[in-house]
Image (tube, rainbow, N blue to C red; front, top):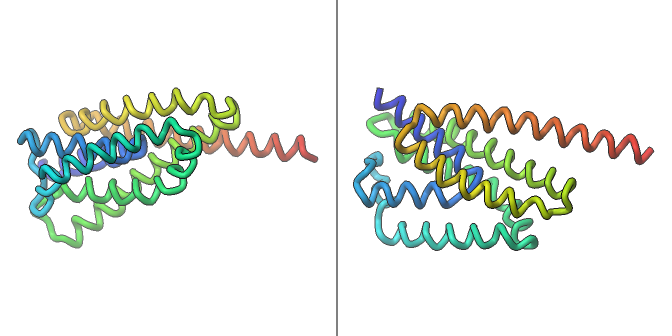
Length: 193
């Protein structure tokens, strides 16, 4: 049962990485430092003071950068690979007492895959917002992302069974947004002819 809970926590945190990359890492670091959670062997460094400071600074920089349009665009380019790596790391950090091949396999496929889908969902949502609102709506999306990153990180750590519902919502949102973008491109293409 602990294995299932560990995977659920990893999946929930990986999905949260799509909203803010460093917020789930910061919250995990704080929870580990406060002895509220126990990470797998070899991952206790996440709760160390230097890691806590690094995640805190990175979180502040990420939040600030999301409100500067030029930097926000640059972040979109870099965020998917970084989010994937963070999702893999977070998932692996909760899976203990397993063969490393299986631990990293699960972390890469489930954690990295979930983080990638979540990140692509938020990026696509910002693209739709940029197209429909001229970028003004992106500020509100950034606020929503920040709130969701904190709330879902806490839910994933302390109520992991609810995290799976969150992941399903992210996947449904991803499918909806991709379809919306496709329809918008088709309409634009049709009007151009």
